[in-house]
Length: 450
Image (tube, rainbow, N blue to C red; front, side, top):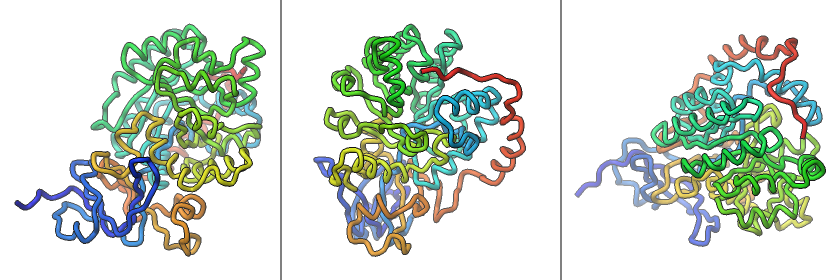
């Protein structure tokens, strides 16, 4: 019997795979057969030659990788890229970012999300975890442009019970939307802007409705030390006593995680993960980075992230992968940690696990959703290739991504975006920029006082 046509077959590529010990490897001259948005098989190009397919992609000379996951960002903040430069964290928030964000409209959020999704798709990101305001607009953009996303409506205690209720309503309304490409979370902003009562209520709602929690915590060492001085507990200890660590929780940044916090994270009842966005920590001159090795040693997955473009200037997860590897070598004093293959593991399976999709994406294997990117290594900056993993991590760039596929749908082919009109977005965003950037009103959405 002739098999029914596959939706997509990618041929003549080198495919990154994981063995049963989750070690990264590469299969040469591979073909990836996709049916109904799912990887059906990884076989040889010769065996796929005669298979019928609705669409074929000749990836000769290219590397097929699982799509990158941006484990923590604020996509609409691309509209603020470059407006708050060379400032300490407190001034960055209080004098620039939070006054500007008091001007945000749903249209600003939509345009920013659209531009961010274009940037991420072009950089090989197939899924992002977002935590922001007016998130209905972000969900609509995700639905339209074809990317995958893990979304939460952020809130502060200063909003009263309404903020928490709106976060729950958003999570329930959009859970499983966009054909399953959208997953959701409750999104309290941070322990320094959300009080213990609200955090405990959030934990209760998360357990009741089977929702994860995505929040900032122990972002930097100053936050941890200030919390200890004022309250006698670290931000991670706050998460423990309020029940947040009894839920599935994604902690953004964690560069202030202390040794005393590690046993609490290791014994957490829920699935706990940390997202690291190293470029922003360097820009803010924070004295420490996410303790990736210590978290690895207690079994906590660390996913790669960019944070928002207001602090990072970029949504380039490829850069986050390289920086994470380099900074870990520097901070641990060990050139063997992280290796290139370990960095690729963080960029694939660990990042998928961090956003609760470890059984859905993160590897190119039968049964996984077909979130795949094709990377061209023929440029002079990536030749010759002596160690493929090292070339990918330390020589390749996000601009080497040629094709981006989500759920078996091609969103970018040969560097051409197929689902977003960037020019139209940039034009309208430019027209709306003066009103967005106006700080003469003297308002701010919150005060940064850690």
